[in-house]
Image 1 (cartoon, rainbow, N blue to C red):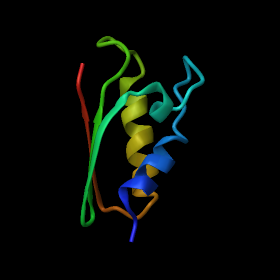
Image 2 (cartoon, rainbow, N blue to C red):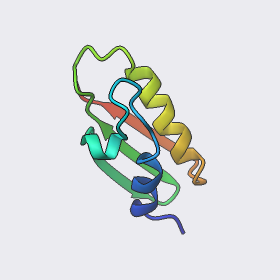
Image 3 (tube, rainbow, N blue to C red):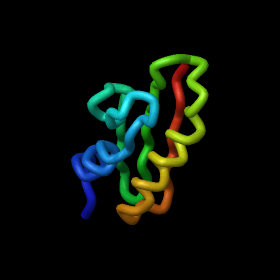
Length: 78
């Protein structure tokens, strides 16, 4: 069974194209909750006007779905 640590690991593969750093090291992943086949992620971009927020949300969702989760919710906090 996939665990929270597995989610963190795949999220460290999502690179912010502006900084070249992964989202985990940047500290923009505020929270991760795993419950059964559902994952909830709280993402806080470095700027409330971040022009690539949609890209980051899609990349996060795609990586986590790749682990086999059926429901992935990514909430953005400005």
